[in-house]
Length: 210
Image 1: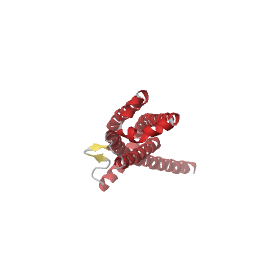
Image 2: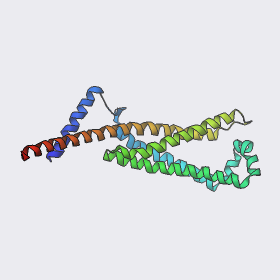
Image 3: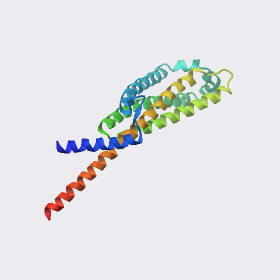
Image 4: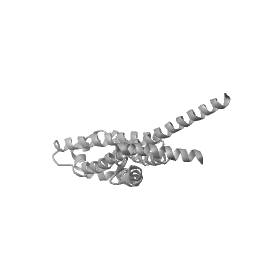
């Protein structure tokens, strides 16, 4: 109990010091980043489930993508010349997105556990996946915008879909990064407290031995 009381006093002192730097550290819109992250993960899971659903629809109903202007103007000729290669790469893209959305759900849950344990290492997989996810969506979005200037008919549905997922992916990256810095700060505070406690115990033991 005494150790827990000392830990609580130490955390309070460190928090008080941080308040001198900022009136509301780790608070955004009058809400702590930890709670924002918890609620955000729920939204992240829903968005990624939507992505998984769209990926499964694209897999089981592959004929739907042939109605897109980008297929008739770009991919139709390639499919006629290389049928097997076209279907292979089509499935690779679908399963890549399916895996990406699934992994993002898993890593977001792991990040929640890391928030509860105050361990920043649990955030690394999710941060890596988010960065990759954002990069892929940005590249695809830029390519589709560029193609719109070359094609006869504008492709709107696909760019808007990528823009929708990219918006949430960018928000996910920002909120996760802010929560990561909060957890990292608490982790360093715990390490400082532990090291100070060990030094005090070491000095007491040396005095007793004398």
